[in-house]
Image (cartoon, rainbow, N blue to C red; front, top):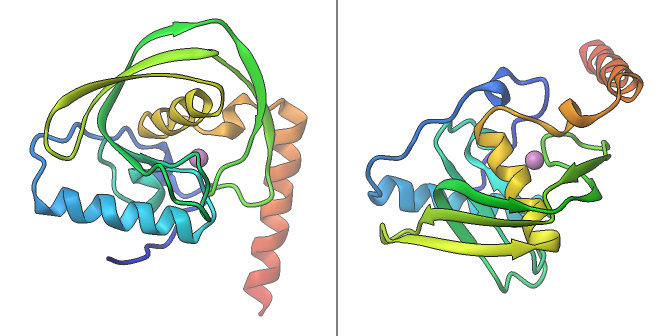
Amino acid sequence: MAIKTIRCYPDPVLREQSMEIKEIDSEIKELSEDMLETMYESKGIGLAGPQIGVTKRIITVDISGPEKREAPMVLINPVIESMEGEEESEEGCLSFPGFRCNIKRAAKIKVSFLDLDGNRREIESDELLAVCLQHEIDHLNGKLIIDYAGKLKKAMYEKRLKKLKKRAAKK
Ligand code: NI
């Protein structure tokens, strides 16, 4: 197992369209372990392949939190099969340190995916799990939380990033 570096915005890999996983081999199993470990270590509840630079359709989720680690999930080639209702909540993202944003998403979703044994499975979710799954599946399509933010909020974050970059360059 290895802890990977989290890619942060505006790293272009975060904008890529991730590829379908054709075969669940040892490489994918190892990747899923690395992703879970990296997610926990970064105090996150969800992580998508591109966030560690791997543009493959795989996400990890554990809404029990990075301390409890009670409900680790690995979803391969996840697809949203149905959506219902609407709910707004505040979201953060490991690829956007210090940035949070209110996002309206479906309140309930049904997601189909492959598990690590290659079985097609389906999960119904609401509340935090539904938010988390939609957020991570967005990552696989190159969509990021900043895309939901207002123009002003986006501009302020970009400005802050530029300042941090300048400061880092001086060191
Ligand atoms: Ni994220």
